Length: 75
Image (tube, rainbow, N blue to C red; front, side):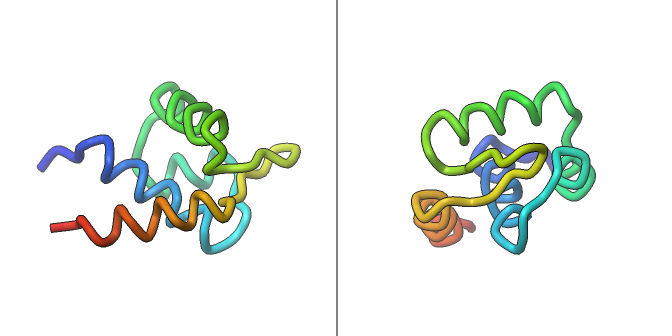
């Protein structure tokens, strides 16, 4: 079954919500290639849902709110 964009965003936010994560860890745990992952991470960071600290990605309060909303609409 193919995942949609909201599922991928939820997976990325869940991974970063547990603890700070590097891009490699996010790619493997979310099962997405680096090219697509980069675009998702850039979008999330540009909209304030993730913070980039060196090589680590960490969820923001806005990201936690988005994650909560995405989990509510999960089928």
